[in-house]
Amino acid sequence: MIGVIGAGAFGTALAITLARKGTPVRIWARDPATVEAINTRKEAPRLPGVRLPEGLTATTDLAEVTQAQTLLLAVPMQALSGMLAQIDAPLAGKRLVACCKGIDLATLTGPTAVIASAKPEATPAVLTGPSFADDIARGLPTALTLACGDDATGAEIQAELSGTTLRLYRTTDTTGAELGGALKNVIAIACGACIGEGLGDSARAALMTRGFAEMTRLAVRLGAQQQTLGGLSGLGDLALTCSSELSRNYRFGLALGRGEPFDNALTVEGVKTAEAVTRLGAKLGVDLPICAMVNEVSTGDTSVAEAITYLLNRPLKEE
Ligand SMILES: NC(=O)C1=CN([C@@H]2O[C@H](COP(=O)(O)OP(=O)(O)OC[C@H]3O[C@@H](n4cnc5c(N)ncnc54)[C@H](O)[C@@H]3O)[C@@H](O)[C@H]2O)C=CC1
Ligand SMILES: O=C(CO)COP(=O)(O)O
Image 1 (tube, rainbow, N blue to C red):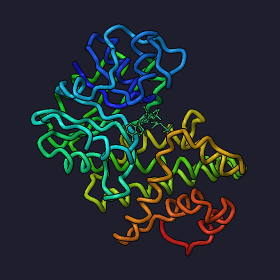
Image 2 (cartoon, protein in one colour; image 1 turned 45 degrees about the vertical axis):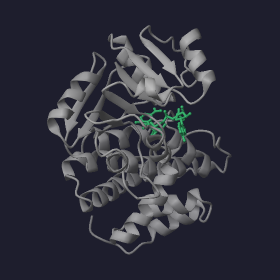
Image 3 (cartoon, rainbow, N blue to C red; image 1 turned 90 degrees about the horizontal axis):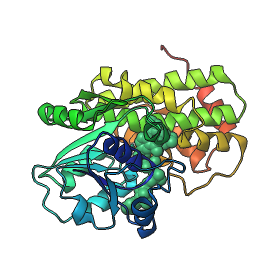
């Protein structure tokens, strides 16, 4: 059995793909109505139109899910630490796989460090890369990165989670994998704002490329391997998220650029990540101008037009 904590779009999509290959999956939802929909109607509230397979059952009882040896933690980044604090079952020997993308604002650390601090007896890992929950749930081909500091455990998790439509690549560079996944959301907001403001595809390509330079600069400064940023968890996810209106981060940026309201019930990880990396960059002396502008535009301190003017008029430099 695999346990999934969080019955949002991503947690449910992963649960579906695992159950389809015959792995029993128990998913925890905090909302009894979600449990009822999954168990009785075989429907997932966050994935309308997808019929859930047999072998996937839900519960509001965390203890039932934490019996599994591998637990997928699919709650938003800022909820991860509070979620871990609710688990009182012993977790020695268990694998805790973070499925969230972001940086914890309280500690300015990524998901694996949050897990290691809260549950030092367990092995932390992170599952990240380019994938929309809806694509995974529909069984469309997807390739992701599984990062685990302990390579032998990483290989076991890789085999456990991979299937005929979900292919996992493996790395021990947790820092690089999780920073790529966190930062691409910030750059996606910038790209959405650029398109929403009517600035064109050339400007978007520039933001993606210079955004990638910021992602790499911060990640390498924090100990990541540069090549990890060029993989699925970095460049791969950047390409997807900056170019598709299926992305909530990109759509949030589009709304900013168009001056339209946005549904704040949607999970848009890049907003808090922009705040976290701006603080981290200032603390470490790492230059992250696009991230800083996304932070200012998201909080309403700067308009999209002012942010673009600022970025275009910075002192000229080598690439
Ligand atoms: N939706 C997608 O296509 C993908 C999402 N992700 C990542 O997965 C993570 C979760 O995103 P989604 O599933 O899309 O979001 P979602 O908004 O669909 O679901 C979030 C889930 O977390 C639960 N939750 C929220 N706050 C909580 C708290 N304080 N305590 C306990 N549970 C809480 C909600 O009830 C909901 O079930 C994010 O970090 C996102 O970046 C990663 C890849 C793809
Ligand atoms: O992480 C994702 C794609 O890899 C999902 O993107 P959004 O969170 O922007 O919807």
